[in-house]
Image (tube, rainbow, N blue to C red; front, side, top):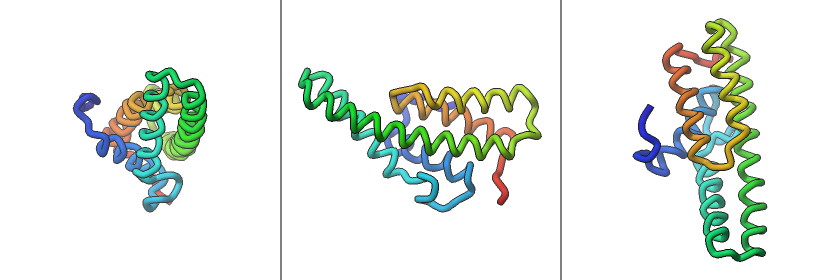
Length: 136
């Protein structure tokens, strides 16, 4: 796995979009597969951090609410993608299947976008290793 510090913002957007596209075997914009969705999340996260650093209580409350709403939207898209992936991965060995299930659980926890990208990259490694493809 590539060092997350060396990944550009564009790379992270693409990781998010590509994961959903692979899980649903869909077109861009379906099921939340859109780099703009990730870009919006990242922007709201930076606005939230900025407000937090400047101790503006009203701005902090507003930006936190916006960020958490967007974060939950992204997590919902990803949870559905993991469910689709798990539905077609029953032939994997138990250890690998457990890893994917754990990633699905982990994706719900972080409140920081970089951690989500790390989990997605680990999942994509499994998908590539076992040549997991969604066939409709």
